[in-house]
Image (cartoon, rainbow, N blue to C red; front, side, top):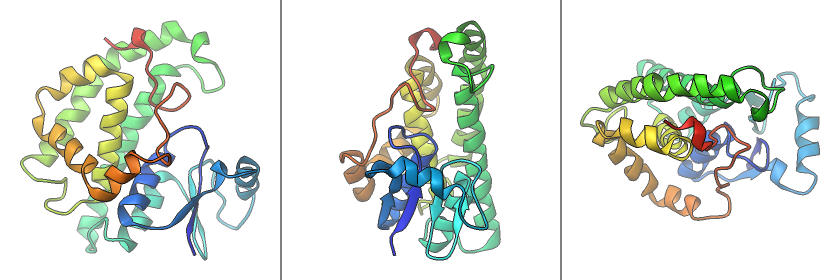
Length: 232
């Protein structure tokens, strides 16, 4: 049975972290909402089963439904050699993923600092203030941390790729799209992170995925949005 991934059909968002893991693992999956009637199927699936997800993304396997990006990736990592098998390594990979999730949440809040129910245009003044702090202080802080963890290794845990590397790649790609000036400035001191970014992009399955129509382009509806006025 192919995995069924439930996420919004027109954005990368949090679902992209799951897509990258499935692609790298060479696992068949159906991106349900991108098919005919898929959004209706997604909405219906959120009300089904005894472990319903609060929001997409969620993954349906043969015998269960798993919500929350980090939980999905922990499940996939253990089963498809994208995480160590021993407890310490599995938890360390999960910890790194949760830190990436913190970064992603902060990115989101640069363009929606007041509330999700409001349009960006309704909170631009607050967004400028939030983004100024994010680009000046928070991007460097996160990249300093991941640069220190990576050190001189090929990947965050050493010689083998994990789902945390795939997610860090996606976060770096998203930052470069949303805040090109601030990200270039912050990455200048971390050539190892740039090398990781290239290393992941050149992996055969990831390279093929990035060149395929399965990869949704960044846009101003997702988490990583490029508003020039917020990039300082």
